[in-house]
Length: 110
Image (cartoon, helix red, strand yellow):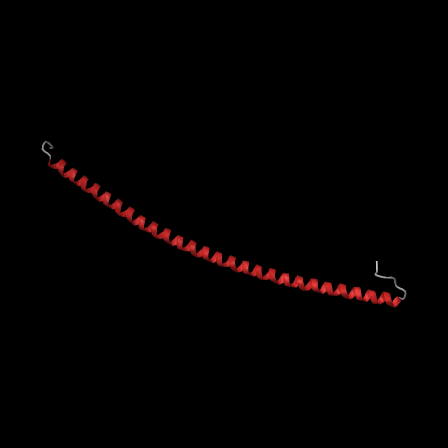
């Protein structure tokens, strides 16, 4: 288990102290590496959050622009439909007036 044989208690204490110091040094090294990895993970998480926020803002901006365009198209087509309906109605009224005049001017109507 231990290298060599211990003939005096002081040898054991020295070996134990050395092994403990080495173990503490390895533990400190491990925690330093963990701290570094944790910092990198936090940086990546912040970058991901910032990127997600940027994408959400762009998506919202795009959706707003798209909605504005649809609204403009809808209003424009509504105006065209109203104009076409008015034109058809005016034409129908003209035809009806012409038919009435023609019917009243026709001979044989008494």
